[in-house]
Image 1 (cartoon, rainbow, N blue to C red):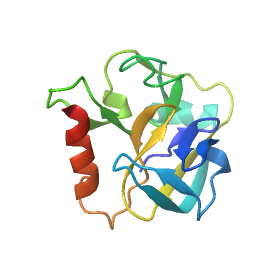
Image 2: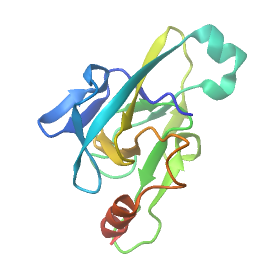
Image 3: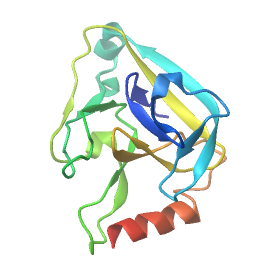
Length: 162
């Protein structure tokens, strides 16, 4: 399971962008399907330099601003290595897919952790891709969610890809 997004990341809600660490159960976030889905759980994970030294695969990934296209992400985004990111390479291409952050190409880099970092993850009432720092990323998925994403999210991904 991914430990989510570095605190300070913004997530789009029905009332604009909010810091992810300020989200609470009952808040609603915008999904790629164009709906506002209810947050049912908010979890935080603190990782330390010692933990990362013992388990280098835990190193967070930073996606630089404009990594995928202009304004996507809108600013640097630091995420867990297993965090799902929607990759769209332009209209008319069938290359849209959700990738684990550790396999994201282009200008992504593993970070050295020199101080404790706190990450926040959101579990929604229904699966979905949420808009964080201007890029669509997977919300937390539990064992109860069927493989992949739901029909509405799949449809939205296909519309986005052209």
